[in-house]
Amino acid sequence: MLFRLLVPLGLLCALLPLHHGAPGPDGTAPDPAHYSFSLTLIDALDTLLILGNVSEFQRVVEVLQDNVDFDIDVNASVFETNIRVVGGLLSAHLLSKKAGVEVEAGWPCSGPLLRMAEEAARKLLPAFQTPTGMPYGTVNLLHGVNPGETPVTCTAGIGTFIVEFATLSSLTGDPVFEDVARVALMRLWESRSDIGLVGNHIDVLTGKWVAQDAGIGAGVDSYFEYLVKGAILLQDKKLMAMFLEYNKAIRNYTRFDDWYLWVQMYKGTVSMPVFQSLEAYWPGLQSLIGDIDNAMRTFLNYYTIWKQFGGLPEFYNIPQGYTVEKREGYPLRPELIESAMYLYRATGDPTLLELGRDAVESIEKISKVECGFATIKDLRDHKLDNRMESFFLAETVKYLYLLFDPDNFIHNNGSTFDAVITPYGECVLGAGGYIFNTEAHPIDPAALHCCRRLKEEQWEVEDLMREFYSLKRKRSRFQKKTMSSGPWEPPTGPGTFSSPENHEQAREKKPAKQKIPLLSCPSQPFTSKLALLGQVFLDSS
Image (tube, rainbow, N blue to C red; front, side, top):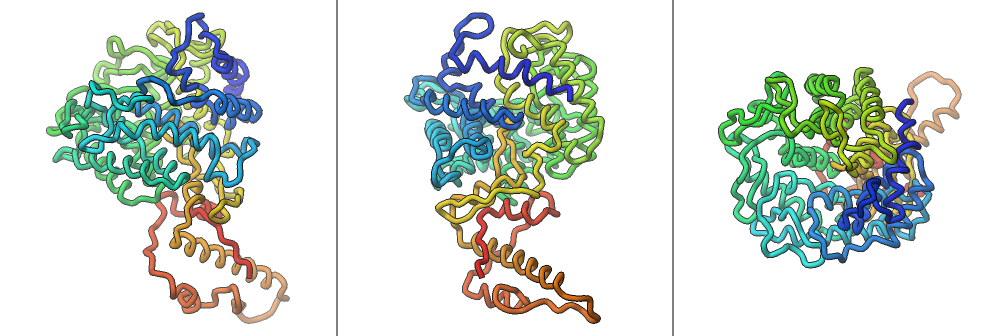
């Protein structure tokens, strides 16, 4: 595949300066905040494994353990630190065993990368100490929130924590992370307008909207994304219901001919008839809720812009059909490629591979430089900027590779999995169903159940396992029988469920628990369900 040419030529070369603490390609010193974080290394770590470079993954893990220190006097974006650092470390932690890293006893409930993720997340917690529970946008990693910090934060900067923080709470047993993320989500939900829309920026001290433009793009985007992904990851019907309510309002007030405009959040009147490149994630999000037809129509609109310029400009004036002044650049963003990957997995439509081919050719032809891939400063004349964003390695490269690699372990349909022993019992991991955070760091949903032993989950999985082994015994006995007339009678005895009455007797001492349907695909292989439910308790009878 064409894209494989990008890997040896560009990826490792682009990472090389960060490995050795060398200056950037232009000879200038790197951003000290980025280097203190080893940001690009963390952001690109799981990409190395997905591309199959196990040895480099192992080496970078050692580099991070020896060099990362979060006790530094740096003002950091709460949003960016969460999605890139916390998300990247959590993903790498959960993928460590697959990458051949020697994990410590108790993994995935313990480990150096998990401790680093927890340390980074704790540095962010002071930002959530506001009257509304909505976080400040910036925090000093050493001193907390600066006294003069602005209270105005964008919507995405408030509502993009539930995936990482809920995962962290589940793995560490400390509920504080998930709790603050949920409070922030709820405060935004309660702040929506009468017509069901949210604005772009809000004062986290007063709860008053400062920027009242409503849309699906910059400043808002990942809030909607995390309602859907949080719902799937946590099997939370309330989060999904919140998104579906927003989705109705978005369709009613912002959608025009399968484009999405910006409108006034209280009146629904159009304020900006523009498309932003960050909005290109939306078709992929629509695919996750099964809205494939609308997703494809919107995707094809966005693809026409790509074909016009060889990339997506940051802003595109829809009525004029051209770029917006001072917003003509393309920093190699992943969103359209991300949507192509999701939609191709859902439909198999070859048009989506065409986009992938066009993206490979454009990036290779326009932005490739001696040691990396440069931001395109202006799509009209293809002038380059002297920088490469870390999301190119974390997201764009990853989604392109996954688009063309149907056999990648990320696409596992539950046909294979790993069983690991934790202090809380046996646990199934790696069966698929990975949830990508907004920086494309994959989280294994089964891992959330490995480090806690809720009785209701234990009983539910016990029942599934008993039914599974019961069916295996039945099948084995059936295969040993010779052909005979008359119906086959199911076996009875210890370890089998011969009737619903026996099943109820086995559960009579356990409190009733309402079954909640899975929010992901309704028809799943048994191993997929097992991975989502978490712990496995084998029937020893």
